Length: 331
Image 1 (cartoon, rainbow, N blue to C red):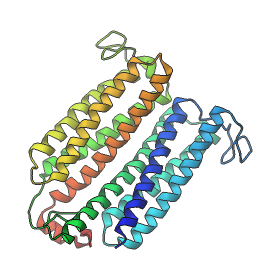
Image 2: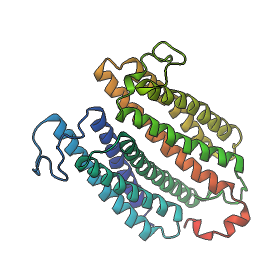
Image 3: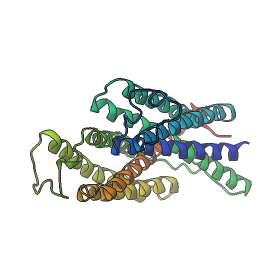
């Protein structure tokens, strides 16, 4: 019951969360963070901001972030009311609510008080977790809906936690690899946010070399940008490895295969958008578009990896472990 309502509520929450995450990046890239001065929640002491580009960008981001908080609260209440036996979906909704509130508070504090680049990068990291949680909520309720449709049609299907009767599992080695890839992705994203907040994007001109060198200096903006590039290159290898094992080793688990392929495609696009940023840094319009695309792809990649990590954990448990936690099973 209520599956369609929960599905569309999760869609709406995810979309608004996406706009909030994208809006934060627009604020950073256009240097509009103080478009409303040091006032919060008002803008230069007014409810309606002045008609300047910076103030409109900053105030619009605040409004969308507020809407993201309201949608997250609505999703949290709905899933805890109607999916009491789906602890995973309840957890996703709770995480989305908590982290959208944390990033909102950090954003407000950044406006009122001077904040370091390291803290501002962490602010983006928290908004990323909120967006990833909303993605996991969408994927989880979609999987439940598909399972219900299969059961109504009399087809044999897997429940949202473990395959029904098939005995299909993933190895703990694959589970651990997925967890490592997800954690490492977060580190790389944080480094990317730190590059933006320290204005180090121009530290490495050209691509794939940095200022025409294979190994440039490691100080200042040049070092920060180069370390991020190396970390991103290693991320490509790690995610491609996850995708390979997800697809080749799990023919009986199409969901795991699809997530592995999606993660691999997204990380390839992420590398290409990163290269575009480096090559167009002197063309502001293309650079801004490429930067926002880069952030969107990274956010999507992190969400997919988070969900893959949860599914790998669920499917790595033995039958004895599953029986010891019956509350995970769906209606």
